[in-house]
Image 1: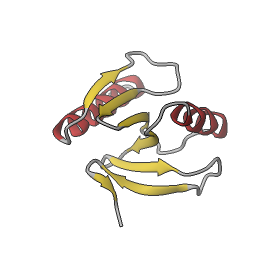
Image 2: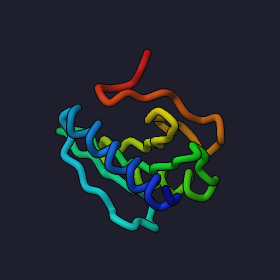
Image 3: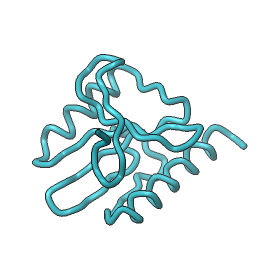
Length: 107
């Protein structure tokens, strides 16, 4: 399977997970932008960058944080493999994140 196909599969899996959690979603097909998937729920908009490696470059991290800050209720999320996991970015550093679950943040 190509890297493109793995990335697309992750984006579809994220959309499926979010829909099961009550979000309406939009996938930016062939995205070269900031967010691959956007999820909407009353009072919350999540911007998801999907990374099969789990690594998000510093410039992309900063751009995702900035985008989420522009929208009330905006939440910057990174989804990664091998098992689809979610991290909420809390700052620009590589360790500035918390685990995140579809139904909300993990304790």
